[in-house]
Image (tube, rainbow, N blue to C red):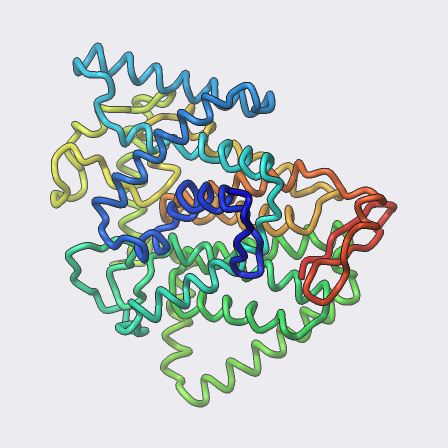
Length: 438
């Protein structure tokens, strides 16, 4: 099992590849759909794998760091409370497995972080390439009906699809921010044009799929990335100013060219973008989210600490009547889902990783990898106002925590590095070795 497999210019041992394939990559909706296009089977697989990962982390409990152990103890405490409630009120061990799945991202973050630590993975370059190639393959197979019309598409199994002519759901397009930031950073650091093209490609993908939640998240991530990179002196002030001038010039020129060719398109995109600033626009999806937020927040206030738990599945949906009984409330917003089902306890436990990043992003001793990943993860705070964050997002959160804890390379290790055009290279900054991503 020590055989090395090379995928996307990245080398894996077979055991590493198998572990990452089944426990990480298969959690990405559009990837798993390419492997097995059946939502029922994939949902069952995800739940079984979640239980297996939970068991594995408990088995390796002694290998966890103190903070990771605290998270696991808190998670187990919440689960034991649910088990006790299920036994006393419903006469079974666990009334709704969905309650486990809602909070499972806490375990998934710890699991991915510990796996990266044990395997010493430099995972970010692979993730960036993975999402670009995954998007291309998926659109080649399923993207024939793509258009800007936003027409609804009737399907028997919606899977990772958006249900309209945008094809891919916002939860998967959100992940394209990772390669966008990665190649933006690589271009800025190396000044090589070959890295600008994949960055522009990711930008176009994010733009044309018209998910306003992803647009807002991408803007947030980019601003955070630029500010954090400037504070950590990865982007000099004069170069940052020149970049902003050039980017603004290109954007203005592109706008006038496109507007001259197809003025209706620029008006259409302008209207779509304006809805970010006016999310409660009449007949828009934002208005329904606002209604859902108002109704369920009032219910949350009745049980603010631990939420409605299993009773939330017994409760008829107060807004729509097309969901099957006892199938849950089907939330759009990630915050409201946690507050309603598990109260403030569940919300703080799940989102505490992102709250930690808010504090950590102000540090002046960050690596480029951690800046890229923290910028992406913090954009999830914006995305959560529109959708429940996908499980893969929380896996990337674990990768981010791993990069934050990585020790800098010492002089002896630096002397052993091979420096060529196809590998990363390093330089000294404030007597600290920094890595330039390529």
